[in-house]
Length: 356
Ligand code: IPM
Ligand code: MG
Image (tube, rainbow, N blue to C red):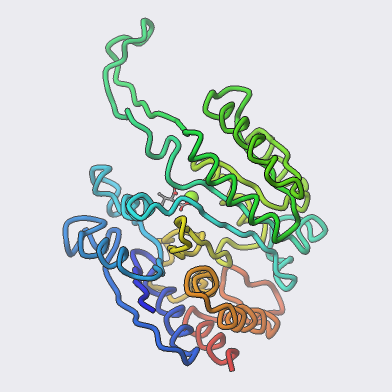
């Protein structure tokens, strides 16, 4: 099994190192090959996604990704910014289906900013489309405005679009996922304003007929943002487009106490995938040894389950994480009074120890 290991920027290298230790402690043979990505790749190769890194990602069975981005690259042209690395990987490898589970571990309810009765036992899944929408739509750019009122002024523009097959394939992914869980799909759109969303909704209704055992509902994105903090447990699977999914998945993640706990998977149609924590590169805490490695460790577990066909090993990792939480070990982001604050490496040590 070849795994491309792309640590990236900020806290990426620290947290990926712990996930790699956990993988190596499973007693299986993995062929791990590391390559630079994001700002780190720009520094050594002049591009956030150098050809060699893309090649490695293509030939690997799965990709373990850290995070990209740092303020020091903010002044670069958009096509050279670290974020282009993750967008490029998603696009080149056709990783269109993004799974972002938001699970509230019982030990961590106190770390959430919401009341325990609102989030206790929370287990929802955001299925975000990753290859389309305004993220990749053409035309886009900065031009001179033709609007009578603002004629001659500079204007930025982007294009939102979704074709029927794109909506169908992400819809099916969501319905299939719901079948294995609570059998409810909530499709989030802005059909009261956007044509793209109107078509999205039509397609969701059409394919829902293939899944009579799954209940489909629809919600406008503004309302969904509200319901997520009001009654998050009412959701099971949420399916939405690239832009809305970006925003709602951060919101959902934070319900659980810390975005530092949540893994994610981005899959192609054959279940080859890229696995990354849902949080970003957090350059403000990079190098301090305080980042939470659990989201990345749990992403490695998702990788074993979805792409490498090793569910027993995935279970072992997830149980080990639950064990260290039950032992009271906490990185700074999930620390509450009465628990024991540990560093990134100490958390990795504890998970490795809990595997056996
Ligand atoms: C995410 C991130 C990315 C996105 C950025 C880094 C381009 O926010 O994975 O959610 O917007 O998709
Ligand atoms: Mg995001």
